[in-house]
Image 1 (cartoon, rainbow, N blue to C red):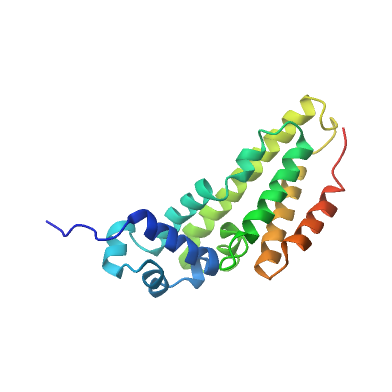
Image 2 (image 1 turned 180 degrees about the vertical axis):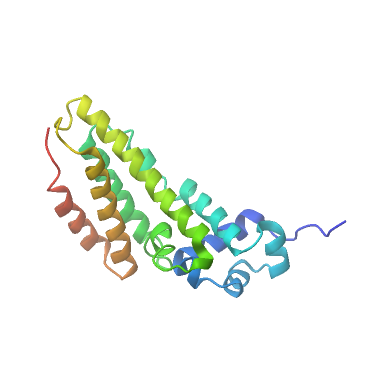
Length: 194
């Protein structure tokens, strides 16, 4: 019979999430994870599996606790309100923590080797799922007359997320919330009207 765990799994996962958010998958070592969580390597392996399994659990936690603003935004009344909320949500999250600026899903994917293919694919899927939710919402806006019938919902969804991802990169580079907000406003000025 093994010894009982002497650490809080959710706290360790949150600490690991913070490291992955700062450094991405490739930049994070198991030594970083041990230092951040205060949990020795064998106990981390026992609780979470290898680094990739821990990363995927951290991505799930990020999606449900932090990066869910896209899914919440689609409930808003107009397509422009949805697009605005997505960009506002990206700016707020990307600048919320001084020690981990940017987006977990973008920071984690900017560099990768063949060894991180599963993590890279998980991040691609996570971003694609967000894009699909927006595309479907913008299609609905067309049928409701909120967007012009000839508006390209797929392009609009990709456009908003491209801007959001760019905001994440610039937040990581140190852009202020005010500057990011001005960029988002400029991007939204090109929004098509019904």
